Image (cartoon, rainbow, N blue to C red):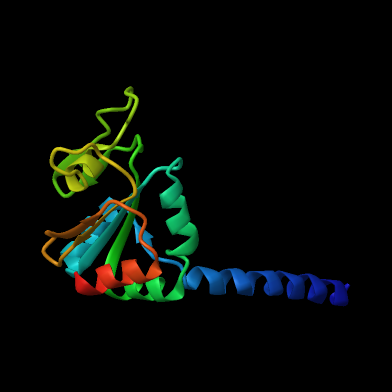
Length: 159
């Protein structure tokens, strides 16, 4: 019986350790609510990734770019990183403001926050959409295309 318990514990630890090691290297994505609290405690640059489940370039960035250790290190060290599904039905509280998805029953149900932060003048909203903000929560750059590892790192370091 003692050997059986040891075997079960050993197998459990073998599977637990790699999972823990992998999660330590992921981008530390937070919500807008968490972002507001974090900015109140310690101002820091902000990176926002707006995506949709059907967006192929967004999925490609998740697979090829946000899994890169160098990108993860840069984001986790120097930014608060927010990842938001633009079709979210959630009501989001950011400070004393409330944001909703006013377009839920429309063909392109883009959330109010995405429209406010990642829209371009005289152009329809498009994905992927990424926004980089400074410590004062002012937009420094917006990107509306797939960025490979090198392009994203350059954008993060320059802004």
